Length: 288
Image (cartoon, rainbow, N blue to C red; front, side, top):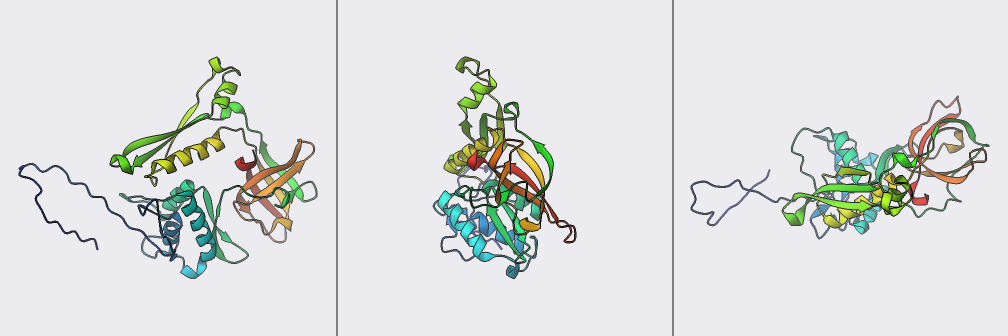
């Protein structure tokens, strides 16, 4: 229960202006050594996800034993290093899963149930992998190629504006901007004088730090400014142990792909007797 103590002179006017309060709560269900980010102003998003998953009053109510805490802690360490902190005021009714989706969107990650362990994990979409050691998809294990589309330049964006409440500006609305001049030239006919700006605005209510907003703007631009391939693969059960967020390397001689990195967004494990698994994937930006 919040408690407030006030002592001092608040003025002599008979008309008191609306008061504003800056409040802070740093959850630490994961018992992290450093639970806060950005000089103690923001909480670690993984503690937020942990609370959403386990809170029995307003969250999803999973037992703490169902969470892979080692996996959550590793992701928390990554977010701490990146300065990706979360501060959010829940001012109206919001489903727990919608709040979870918002945190996932900010950290660029996917929370999923690992069928091999029965525990909840998260996979952050990051680079640093070896394309030669990730699961290889080719004609030997591809049963069927479902929906497939190549990205087109006209479907891309070359300017991203990230809207956020800036803490240093007394939480006023602010914007971070990222631009891809090369993309603008391509969409305008290939010359500097004919460049066309295609802009999109994304709002991140959990961001209160300008540096983080800039980081996210450039991250989103990287995804939106390149024509990425999308595909649905029906594969054999040699892919039984892949999880959402994993990267696979796709080789298809007919389409001209050799170890094209595709990140798994959704998995349908199908029926065991059928022996088929369906993977919905998008080309990974870290190797684009």
